[in-house]
Image (cartoon, rainbow, N blue to C red; front, side, top):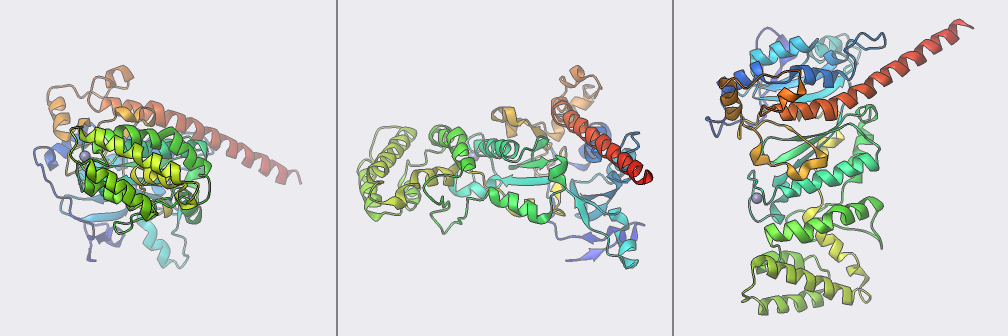
Length: 455
Ligand SMILES: [Zn+2]
């Protein structure tokens, strides 16, 4: 790790250049001039500040005016400089700094006990008070973790055939966060290229300790495999946990048998079906099915039809042998989970001080904006239709960029729909509940002080 100082901010702006350089693959889509225009005219500073203030930006006497200022931001700048522990007093300070520095990437960190840019002064004073105190519960899902179950793309590439793996992940996790954990204020965001981020913003989520975050993350863990391990999912016992059973019935099974078979034909070739046969812990069944499939290799059916037939054969065979071999009881479910269950980067969820890319950033490699995704309509989300920087600049140049307060006007611009969704579906209900909480804790404080006076 190399460290250097920039500007006049001294040690507070220590730079860590371990981050990979954001390489620009397509300068027609992404360049610093476009980015300046984007930050100058389109970035939704007001909504962004309102979100991260969580109601602490009003006139209410219960507001904590230091709240926004204690949030860590990190910028990745054009010259590969990576700066952590930036903080802003208010919306205009944030706006000015973003416009001036024009970061290629903005990350959001935790809310600390004190202003992160002054953390060194506190550590010198000997009192070890610089600690993270609040942080959204976040989830990070990346399609590169699905390379062993998608045959259309690999690595950072993504297409309309494999993106539905992300869609089903959103459905499973969103449903569980709402129904099992009772969270309400959940923001899903396209990561700009190959995945999705989830921000759980309820007060009780933001105040989870690292231990509690780990417990939530572990709740979602069923995927234990790696490339050398055929049986990636181990579903214990005679029946599924209610969360897994619901995910299976409501989403995973239909997705596996429908869309996944249609787009990936996961049994259509020997190379593909051998991976699945490896998941069956009974060699007799393995060779019975293999024999059947090798002999039917020269079929005139489509790949998809062959794949579907083989899946039915596998299910029927397992069904008929289930009584004799209890280890096969969950085999069908395990195969479905292996192919479709969300593969979350759980380490990101476990630590309060983990950074995550901010919504409405622009991905330097694709030029696409990290727009919110509506979990109720996530089937309609097309990552390849997300507006790019060059499209937005074209819109600005043709005079169509006005970001009016009137929501009807927003509908007419490329980014407007995303901002409107962010405001009305996420921000407004969130701020309503934040204000109620500030009001009720303020009242409780007043009551308490009355009680102590009346002694
Ligand atoms: Zn693909």
